[in-house]
Image 1 (cartoon, rainbow, N blue to C red):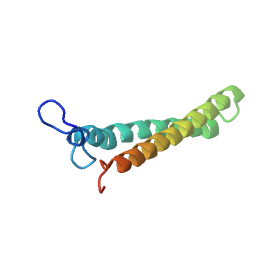
Image 2 (cartoon, one colour):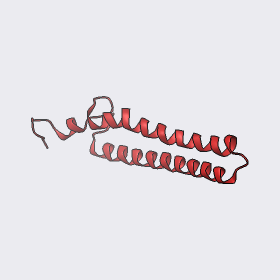
Image 3 (tube, one colour):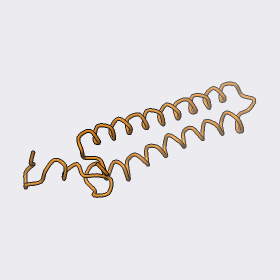
Image 4 (spheres, rainbow, N blue to C red):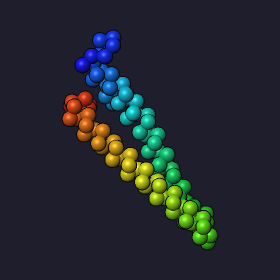
Length: 96
């Protein structure tokens, strides 16, 4: 299948080494989102254990940050894994 200008879908999507959508996602977007999720998790741990050890309300807030940080990282890894399985199946992934 060719897009306008004579480029194929595989060229448009690209891979992590050649640019395209997959290159941008795997080199910029995914690391930024993962970093944000990890920072949320770390902030929750700091709030829960160190900053507000005696205040139960603030500790609960820290637990929520920990929970959402873990959920964010699990969802990110899951979507990333499904994406790579799909790309491998279609023969677009790097090394395929």
